[in-house]
Structures are given as C-alpha cells and as structure tokens.
Amino acid sequence: MGQQGERPAVLVTGGAGYIGSHAVLALLDAGWRVVVIDNLVTGFRWAVPEAAVFAQGDIADQALVGRLIEEHGIGAIIHFAGSIVVPESVEDPLKYYENNTVKSRSLIESAVKGGVRHFIFSSTAATYGIPDQVPIREDQRTQPINPYGWSKLMTERMLADVAFAHPLNYCALRYFNVAGADPQGRSGQSTAGATHLIKVAVEAAIGKRSHVSVYGTDYETPDGTGIRDYIHVSDLAAAHVDALEKLIEDPETSHVMNCGYSRGFSVLEVLDSVDRVTNMTIERKMEPRRAGDPGALVADNGKILATLPWRPKRNDLDAIVKDALAWERKLAERA
Image 1 (cartoon, rainbow, N blue to C red):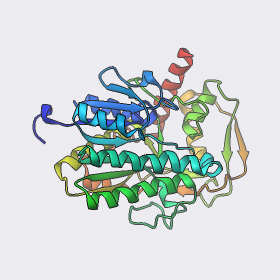
Image 2: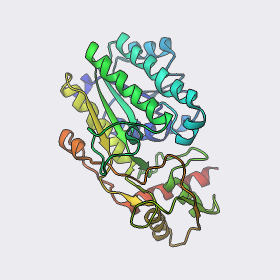
Image 3: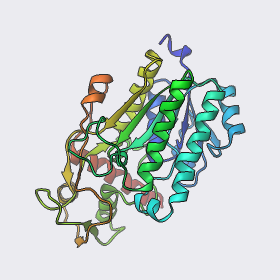
Image 4: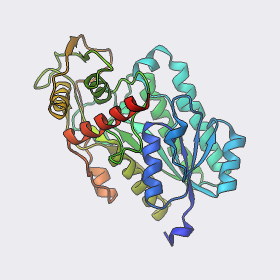
C-alpha cells in the first residue's frame, strides 16, 4: 500500500453519527486523511474531530460530493449515512427508500464519476430477515421482513452490479447489534429517543427513563426473551479500517461480511449485566412481542476472521455496558 503519505483520503458519509464518528476516530488513529460529509439531521457537529475535514451537506448533492472527491483526492468512500429505525421504516417506507437506496445510488454514481476505486457500505443483519439457521452465515438466504432491510439489500445489489461494470471494489459489512462507546470517551451514542437496548438500559440506570420494556417473553430461547449478538462500536470501527486496507491491497475483489462476535445474549442477560455494572436493579416491564422481531440473531463471523486481520478486542458484555454507561454519564453532564 506504499508509504503513509501515498494513502488516498477517505470520504466518510454520516461521519457525525454514532458509528460513523467512531470510524472517523479509528481512521485518524491509524493515520488516514479523513473528509466527513453529514447533513446533521441526526448527527452532531461536535462528534467530528478537528483533524477531519467537515462538509455539511447531503450525499445526494452530486456537485458537492464531486467537489470533495476532486479537492481532497478521495480514493475511498465509507458510507454510513442513512435512516436506521426498523419500526419507522414500516410506517414510512418511502423515507427509507429515499434516504437509504435512492441517495446511495446517487453517491455510488458520484464515486464512479470521480474515479473512486473503493467503497465500504454500512449494511445490516436485517438483510437476512427471519434467518433459516443461527448463527447466520453470509451465504444464507436474504429475505428482509421490513423496508429498512430491503433498502440496505438493494444498495448491496447496486454495489455488486456497479463493481462488475466499473473499476470499483466494495465491502458490505452486515452489522449485528452495535453498542458501547469509545473507551477514551471521545464519542458515543448520542441520539435522543434511541431504541437500542443497551442505550435504553443505561439511560434507565442514570434516571433518564423509569424502566426498560422487554418486548416478548415467549420466544424459543432459554429465558424466552430475544437473543442478539452485541458488537462493541470500537471493534466495529476497527473492522472498517481493516476492510479498507483489504480493498486497496486486492482491488479486483469485493466482499460481503458479517460483523458480530458469534455470541448472543438475551434481553434479560443484558439487563443483568447492566445491574451488575451499576450495582442497582433496573425496573423491567414485560410487553408483547414487536412485529417483525426474530427470536435470535447471531452472526457467524468466520468469514471476516478468515478474510481480515480483524480480531475482537472488546467482546465482553460488561465492558460494552461500562463504556455505554460512562458515555451516558458524560452526556448527562453536558446537558
């Protein structure tokens, strides 16, 4: 890949958001030049470090994206920008097909026009729908059960077709349940009204919520509650840096890989972890299942371990909760 100075600059879309801001930190820590584009609808300007160039705008603004690619010598795009709330996608599918599919198409076109050779896409385990078997492998059937999953799968399909027709390779990383915060306290999940379990639970722990709702206690799981594979956001960010280096090293090959730990925890196990870390008991309210929630989603991460040098460093549930809690306390001080 040559000396550090020869590295292309990286354009990070949605780099002021939760996962995007952690990827920006990981890239900067590894010596990459980073340009962030974010419309700040759900992101935060303060989440972008001063060492990164920041442009406020929309990824569908081809004039702006084209100018950034040209001015900064962008050689790779890491694409996080989009909408991510599954129930909202069911209520407002057109928003999701616009933000996640139509705008991604525009961004990919800007990449092709600008001669960008490498593209990393923030995809999701929601592309699998109700999995045929768990742990889930990348070659399993993709049959999403909500517009969010479809909007992401359509973008994966576009990337595959564009990579066949143009000199561009890509990596679609299918995330499982992302949680935690930067261990150094530089960023974390800051969105108001977040629906992620660990975020909700640590909000309850510091008094921002009165209780935690447990949706569904009759799943075919050991304790009846849903099981998910929780991955620390800093480990996930590190996977993007390794994926970028892989794409540059082997420009003829593209990849689709799960990002998870191959280990699932139930809702009750997560809440027990929060109780342990905080030395208190959070009130739990048992509620009916939500539509479209699979009983268990756990990654088979064999492919990413075989393809990249990436290895999980923070795959300990209590450590994930501790980092999320520390960030939640920091947010409360800021308010």
